[in-house]
Length: 293
Image (cartoon, rainbow, N blue to C red; front, side, top):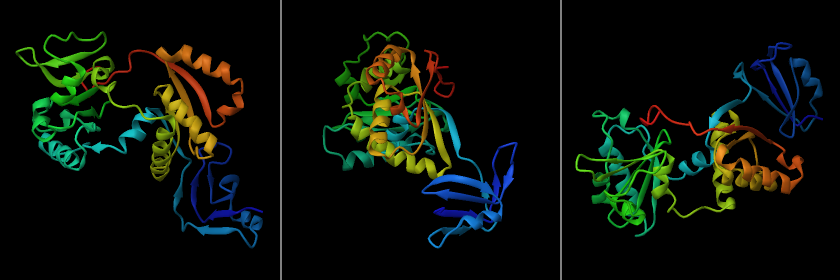
């Protein structure tokens, strides 16, 4: 007996064999039949029937390039995406600093200087007056730049004499002083690597919250490009029976050997379940918005 019936819907299946339908039959959350109102014959006394009154239904969306650990973490940090200007971003950070314990990291992001009136990059000196007792690390919307305060740079030992790391850049002012903007992963890591790491279990908790938000947007699958820690958290979710996304786990070039060792050690490909190992991601994952592409 089916457990739920969605009927009187305008369903686009995206299947050439049956492009349109009106009814979906489910058994404990799994689709078992798609068709017309005749599927009502499968219903029993305990079947929950939802009349959708002609609402449109589409198959779940798949995000073809996402950094899922970053996404899940960002959803639980300071949010300064799509603010009107730099001052609004600073006000949001200031409020977070007032609530934070001295010494704890203030993490967040979403900023994009290209959306602000003057289109100028922010600086550490913009943050310093409101974050005197807390190091700050704010990732750009693009994921290819970070905005940090002076305390964070001192902890990282960044000064005017610090050379640019290979593959990254420390933005500097006319006098050669670091401005507080770090471009691309190697430079961002000078500060980002100091942020206390979360355990796989902690990341799994954040991913569980993030996937609930993904479902609300119709997202049921992702192609992930994050690091091995993301894969470990996905494994934890799977082991808990809480993984609710179909995931293609693409492997960044630096971690291919690590992935081979992990798969060889597991020797149980069935444990990949809803996860599939995808392509290797090369070194040119850059951004036009962040001015690094």
